Image (tube, rainbow, N blue to C red; front, side, top):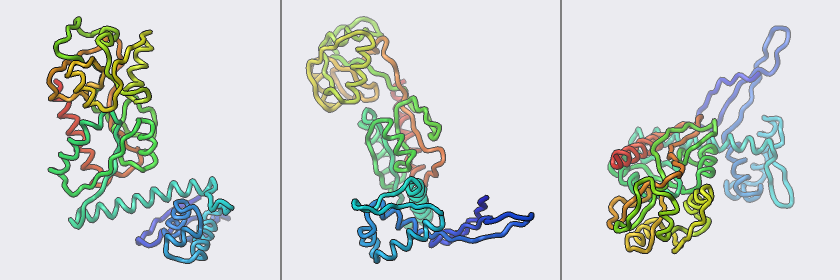
Length: 329
């Protein structure tokens, strides 16, 4: 039975535990796990060998080996295997590494929070976003933070929903804008905005009343991203579900460029509603029949602690989405 009392002075972590219970009496043992031991294990995993880890830590290899030995003795498990290809973590080692990375991030966040309160330096925050929303979200968030929290440094990852959720759970990202549904119980999900696929056509094109059948929009001649693009995959899937084969007149990357081509009369397109530049002249958007809608949501790990910088970014994201929703009403 482990009973942590948790004294922490910034240089090492101490845990007291019940080592033996017999005859109604508990003997208290004591073991010390130092943060530098965890740092050494993390460096071995990052560098791939004990020798490279020693160089990175500016120490000798015997110290690296001793730190690992003490950590393995403390945990009563082999954490690293040495081989011809360097050092590889065992199954136990991977478990410890995951926890150690989280401890390192929490320590960094703690220092950042204190320094922000002291006004000594800015904080940093990492968030992710799906590509179809990044074009309009990222510039607005950067501008909003420049006015409200100019000291926050951003790291922004663009990616697909499954990858972003994995990064949030792993602690690589504090939070992310993803596409629902999100069924992972380790995530806290805050729905933000409905984001449907819409037809984008030149203003002069005459169409029937909304919602317009997909084949009618496609008959104008489509301008879409190339095969393999996430948006193209959504459009192709929607067409297959309706038993349609769509004719793509122009394949080109770049949502803004696609919208410009539509405005120039090169054809029609099917884009996410939020991706259509609101200031673009010469085009109109129409609802498409039998196209499933999606919602964008903000997710973070259920057990994560958001730093001051993370919370500032979160508030900014919510403001940007709220303004977007009000603009569409």
